[in-house]
Image (cartoon, rainbow, N blue to C red):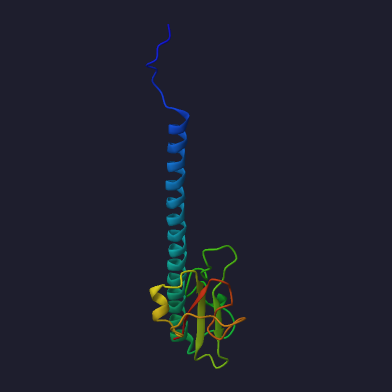
Length: 148
């Protein structure tokens, strides 16, 4: 009367498969989050280098660096002043009143980024409050700063 050779999965088998899929997806999401941090840091470094180039073009034309904001660079030296990849993030610029020196900085998310080995302060640390390296104090951020 009853056919005992039914095909299908038991409840236990289905739960095991769902658990494995959950574990694999969490590993993939963790890797994806790390890749997102690296891509945001790469954008910050590219923006800083692009801004540095615009500052040098400005210096060649005017004999000094801008003493107020980076907005004077547009549109002649750079199309738009870059902003960071996170909403509301700006790069910090500080110029000496003489216009012969500046500090330009960004906060990187990755502590071991290779760019931190060649920036101005070299150690990538941020002191409390806005610091002299052109960065601001934020948890889990590492200062990447440049000078001419």
